[in-house]
Image (tube, rainbow, N blue to C red):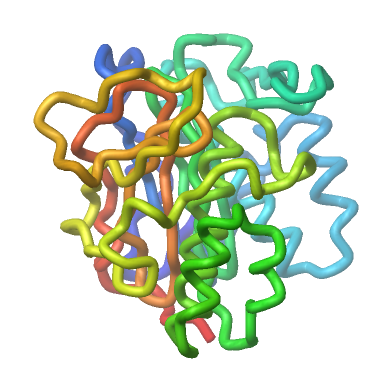
Length: 286
């Protein structure tokens, strides 16, 4: 894979090898894919299902984004496990809601390593952890997103309804990625709806969330559910909260994007991010 001048080569981002970390501190890896050329070797590492999915895209840009994301995922997981990218085998856990085989993606070769993938526009982000993890990232769009308020938990909907534009739009974007991250973490997915739990209540105002240092996060939220761990991580503030059975952490994103990460464990205070999202080369989105 070739990257434009000044961008981190994909192979370098996955260079470190070794087992999954003992503590469930998630690692996040960002990739900027505009102008990225996929090598024949990279494309050959994709499995039959990935190739079929890529071939089904009508637009070349969508196909490239999918292929780049999955080649990156295989390189990152290879770097963590020592297994060649083309030999990694993927599966799915049962959905916790319906029992179908569409739950969390798993690495058959190494069930102790958990991962999550998201891509939007020119960016790809991958999270890996020793605990189940979910990550979501979206480019911030200019069009109105107010119609999504109908899909929210009522507590979140009430918070955003009283906000003026453009703060309402920004809060809805943050809600979307946070809810998606939690659903990816639990394995339920958005097909069963996104209104079962609030994700905005623990932030410093849904319209003005506190910004974490780049690449780090504080456990963000707390929602009462019987299946959630009883105690927040030691040393966290009153803002420590859970959502839908997972710890939801704020996540610094590149300019023009918004992101969130969720972890099914007693949430850490830190997210390790490579490279830092404010690094040069990220597009501002539109």
